[in-house]
Image 1 (cartoon, rainbow, N blue to C red):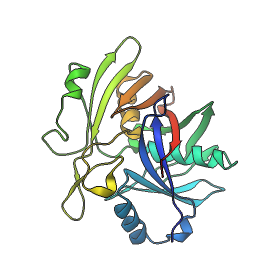
Image 2 (image 1 turned 120 degrees about the horizontal axis):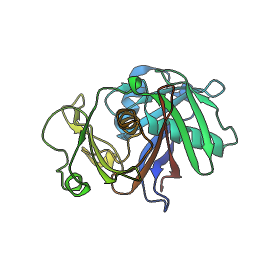
Image 3 (image 1 turned 45 degrees about the vertical axis):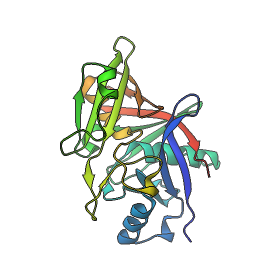
Image 4 (image 1 turned 90 degrees about the vertical axis):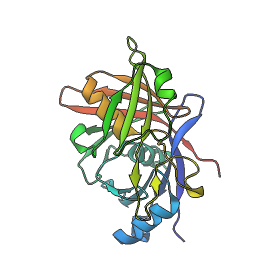
Length: 236
């Protein structure tokens, strides 16, 4: 049986929210691409991350339906887990490239590039209330990150994320708690989309996503963007 750690990533300061993540610390236990895809689909979490080389930080990221070259919430979660085990990484290496890791108290930061983010659309709405009122998912196709300013001067954003993707069984899937019980249509917290929005706006953001998640971001002059947040163990 594959040993699995289950975390919630991008929790709020009170421990609420957070997107569920599966971590396979021994990637060698699930060596094949097909086996990894099958496990990720069975778990149904937004993402499942496989640690292939703890010394180098080599990782492999899967959603229930696709393999990703980069994603924020698996890297933040894995970095937190490794630190809790006494092995805080300075670098993680998904397929997209080298990701710097930094710790500030209970906030874990990972740093990536907008070009690493798989195709998604950011769409601004007039108000946070309008974002809250969206059906799940909104009509249309393709990955949608719906957002509005909650406090523009302070950089506070209200956001919701809708993958609107189809898996191999023709079922529209998304992520978050409850993935094992059926098709899910909304992503609770999305680091890659937060990175992309920060790149587009060119300023630090404090993003309130889903039902209680919080994502912090910082752009840098070299074009990279840091995405940070808190991590909590998932309830058994």
